Image (tube, rainbow, N blue to C red):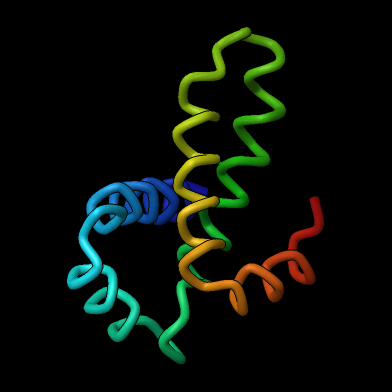
Length: 91
């Protein structure tokens, strides 16, 4: 569980670092398996689902919004991975 959480936060950090930098985005994408953001998106989606469940109890949605923005960025940057993600982890 801890490794998944660390991977999810690294994915979130990477998303925000490359969001406004196309050169860095290409470098990150080229270093990923098959040149896709799918592994990052899987960890982020799992974190998002977990945060959705826990935020309803606490009332705080700030982290949820940040994760949704990162997921949206990856989905727009890599539509093919977004389709695969929806098959792996349905909404």
